[in-house]
Image: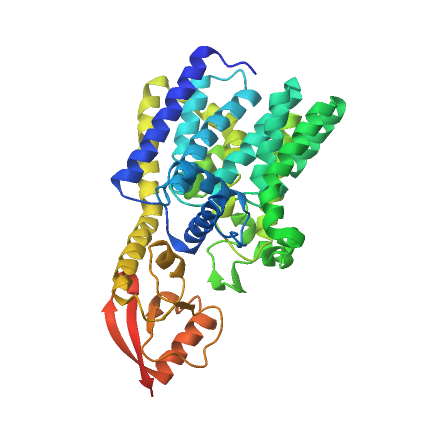
Length: 477
C-alpha cells in the first residue's frame, strides 16, 4: 500500500503531537508509571534483566511473559533513568498503535476520507480513557496491543504484496505479541492460519529461514528462562477454571479473594464495544453498525473478536486490562458506523461535536485515572515513611513490590504467602485492614492480620495515607 507524501506528513505530525502530549503529562504530574503489584514486578524483573545483560546474575523467573521487561531492559541500557525507559516503551508503542490503527482502517476502507480516519483514531483511540492511562504505565498491555495489531496489518499487507518486509515484520510482531501477552495467541490464531496459507502459495526458502530465525530470537528469552517448563503457561489457573457457565455469572471466589461485578461475564467479554472507559459512544455506533461484507475483515478481525470475547467471558474474573488488547480491532470494525453518523451531521456542527467529544474524553480520563495517580503517590509516601525503620523485619501485603522499587531494604514477610503461627517481637507490620477486609476476609492476609491482633500487642507507629498504618509488634498477649 503506497501512502501519499502529504498523508505521511500528516501521520508524522499526528504522531509527534501525541508523543509530546504524553511526555508532557508524564513530567508535569511527576508520574513514573508505577502503581500496584503488577507494574512494580515488571520493573523489578526488567532491572534483573538489565543487571544480567551487564554481566550480573541470572535474572531468574517471574510470573508473566518475558519480552516486555526484556525490551524495557534493552532500552534502559540507553536511558538509565529508573522506570522511565519502560514508560517510554509504553508511550512509543501507544503512538504507533494509533498510527497502525489508522493504516488498517485505510486498508479496509480505501475510499473513505483519510482526514476523518485520523480524527476518528485520535478521538476514540488516543483519547480512549483506559488506553490513554495505560500508555503511561509500566505495564505490558499497550505494547501487546500494538504488536498484535501490527502483526495483523503486516499479514494483510503480505497477502496484498507478498514482500519480504511484510513477511518478516508479520513474524516479528506475531511472536513479540505472544511473548508479551499470552492472550494475544487466541486473537492471532486465525490471522496466522491465513498468513500460513498465503505463504504456502508464495513459498520461498529465504523467507522461511528468515522468519524462522526471527521467531527463534523473539521466543528465545522465554525458552531460556522457562526451559522444560516453557509450555506451563497453558495450564494457567484461569484457563483451567474456564467454563461456559461463567458467561452468566457476575460473582466469583478465587485465589485472589472474593469479587462481585456489575454485569455478567458475557457482557464483560465484549464491553470494549460500549463501556465508557473504552468507547463511550459505542452503543450509538452499534446502532449504526452493519455486518461487514469483506471476507478478509471478518476473518482477521470480527471472528477473532468474537472468540476472544467468549474466551474472556468463561474466565472467573473481570479485568478490564484484558480488553485493551482488542480495542483497536473494535474501532476498525465500527469505523463505517462512525462514518455514517458523520455523513448525517451538518458540516457546521462537526467542529462543535469534536470539541464536545474531546471534553467528554478528558473528563473520563480524569475520572478513571485519579485512583491510579493517587495510588502512585501513596506508594511513594509509604515507602518514604518506611525508610525511617530500615532495620526491622516487616510484615505486609500488596505493597511489597513498591517498597522494593523505592529502595526499602527491610526484610519483608508477605502476609499472603502462608499462615503465621508466630511473629517476631520488635518487627513492624504495614497493613490497611479496612482496605483488605472485604476481598480477603477468608484468605491469608486477613487471617494473618487477625492472628497478629489477637496474639500480640500492636503499637501504632505512624498513620499513613489510604488507610495504611505502621505497627510495631510487642509482647505476646
